[in-house]
Picture 1: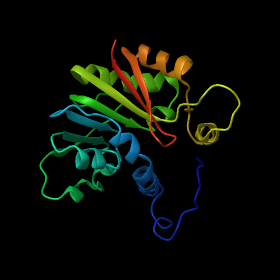
Picture 2 (picture 1 turned 30 degrees about the vertical axis):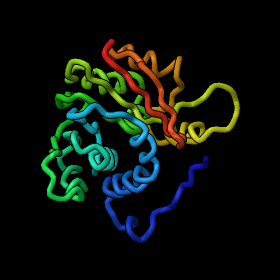
Picture 3 (picture 1 turned 90 degrees about the horizontal axis):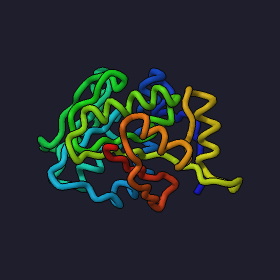
Length: 209
């Protein structure tokens, strides 16, 4: 599996930088999230919170494939103004909630974080996860959709992404034992299992410690 980096096209070149970012993330999310979402067994009737969900690229397929779920798209207000959840049609199973994930998160059963913790150093990533833990209902869980870097020196897309992330953000890609377990533990969570879908994206499931 390889990662292709594309320069802005006509559709995004004239957008403001932040809007270009969210539009690009949406287009990247659409193909790579399908397998992880379909391979996960969401509990019926659960409230699913897409944390820092942008325009809804993760929550949209989750709600499409799981008709009993209620979804909350959580991001900054100006980002939510351009969400795409209306593509679900006349559907009252979702809502948008503005806020800052460094301060708090909405109450829910399942928290979705795709490429969120890799943007931040450990201290700020723990703050985000701890806010999910505080708001999580009993029996809830947190799902991180991230690249898990395998041990050894064999090629892996996560190693390329690690260089890209470190060059742009204060974060990094992480490995299973030394990174994810400790990160989650510091937030009051326990790594429960890691599901590797057919893509390079892993689903890292955490529950209350």
